[in-house]
Image (tube, rainbow, N blue to C red):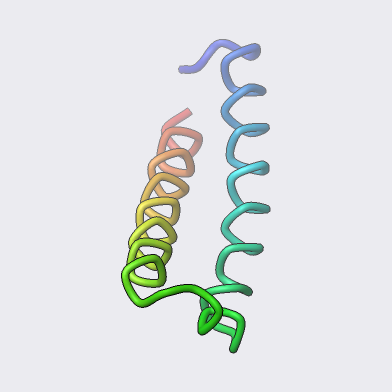
Length: 65
């Protein structure tokens, strides 16, 4: 069981991460992605996948509590 102060920090971190995921996804899946070179676009997509995985981990930590 997570101490309440830790749980609050994890919830806050997940909320901030979800906001960043939304913003990055809006960019990656829009025509704006064409404004960066191909390698940067691939790295941004990889970053989005990593952020989504991190979000899943934070969610699982909270579900175990």
